[in-house]
Length: 232
Ligand SMILES: [Fe+2]
Image 1 (spheres, rainbow, N blue to C red):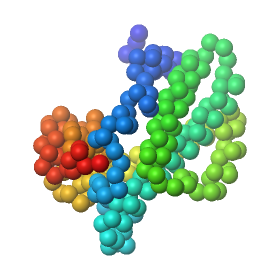
Image 2 (tube, rainbow, N blue to C red):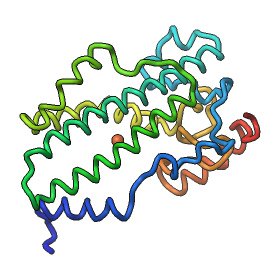
Image 3 (cartoon, rainbow, N blue to C red):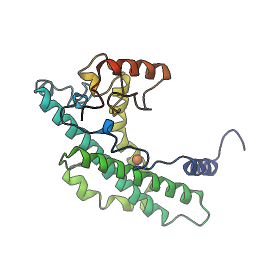
């Protein structure tokens, strides 16, 4: 195989990778582990200042309990918007596949992608359910318009999939901004903890923390200041 893969070769590589490594929302997340319990007084839900709402003077002036409550609701809403967006992606992919010829590597790759996205949706909604936050997700207009968007996955796939990528940018940007500050939701109220949300309380940081050295530092600082895992 040449150093530069063709489009078809890349699809084959990605498809084979999808068989070796895949995500299952109910196998890969220990939802019922007490360390993952969602409790109402956990200050790690306080929004960081890099978040548009978290950095607002009005939000910062609220009582701690109210900041926690709003922070949890905002994160739940972001997750719900995430799965609503992925719902549109899946439907657009299925429209696109209607015209894909037999033998196309696109078919297999896109079906792997759909499989993966269904688990993301399960993960997001399970998280929303566990917060108990009764949030709507996307705005009402989007939930109406989204019914017609998937057909563009077949009629104008370049525009449809570019739009999907663009739609992921805001949350990507927020996540990168949080990571750039070296912190998480919790760090906004605890300057010494450099862990990454959502991390198990009182344990090592999530795999999304950057370097091994930084993860070791995070673990040490977490031991100093994070809530005890027994607090649930
Ligand atoms: Fe996803």
